[in-house]
Image 1 (cartoon, chains in turn yellow, brown):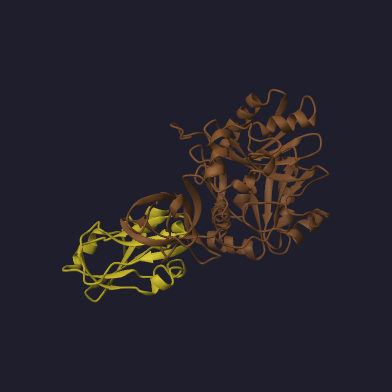
Image 2 (cartoon, each protein chain N blue to C red):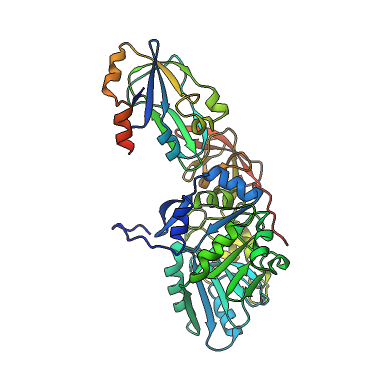
Length: 119
Length: 373
């Protein structure tokens, strides 16, 4: 698992990258009440706003961590936004990206580096 | 008031208790206050509606108004600051009030109590310095005495009566908006959640022990400011600085119920408060715009600042408070809309992240109130 400074996690699954938010991010957000997901089969560039998360406190975005194509989104989050708080690094993945070269993930933090960031 | 320099945060008496309970402390109105506890806003909100929630609201301003001449002089002097009937409030009763300015805007909203030989007033934390100055300047024949050595706790929800009765026998007999002095504890049957409940002023030295006794009662949990906000929003209650301020009149704010007959046209003490010309005119003719309840159609919350449009695209208003209502299990909001669009059931559009989404003007409160009248 890799981590971004924006508190997203990235997990390789075949030639796809699964993206979600970290437990730290979910705790900071508080109870999530609304999730808006991107369309599949859309091309996104690093830094694009791809998802909206609203908690009882505030709205925030998930930015695309890398360039790629959205190949799947987790529709369960739309019906049950609370899943983000219950299982942020498992069942509550947000979207899957198809990328050309998985080595782009090398730039991101590993578990220890991320723990240092939030510690 | 935006401070340019980072102001020193003020500390309240129960701070260490909040920390012990796992409260997440944030700056609020200049004080270090718990925004939530480990349960989180959603569960704290639902707990308050199902059992009982204990809120520390010690940041609010408690003030005693004592007459230098007689009580009637004090009541009439206070009436000169508000479009509210003070003279008619019986001893041992509390009432909602509003300070207005010369243009009919709202300087603050407050609760006041007739305690026989003086009035007890509770004002908003962010406004208290200005309110105290305003009262002192506006009522020269009155001694304005800030109360700085007492905590203020609110116990709210269906379990509040039994829990407080166990600690402070006698309170169960009180009705909504009654006030009692029990020893050196001051109890009002009121609150800011739409639930039955109490607000209790306790001398600072006893406050922690008192709070611990309440927390030891079955069903009582500590509740932070986050849930306090979602609870008051569901109850349709205004938050000063957001839903009401100096740009909104009491009539526009749909607070006509707070202006008693005696102060309206034809009443025994008609007018005679700041902004009377505008407020009486709006009472007679209707205001240009009105604070209304709003129910967004989908699941996306419409928060403060969301612009509202008629179906034909004409701008008609703006959201002043909005979010997710945990008990109604849907997004809810309130805001101001032009009077022609203020009727319950009117379909509007709210612009969220560049998209115009449907929203309907709705009845408030969103959640039925359970006051013990």
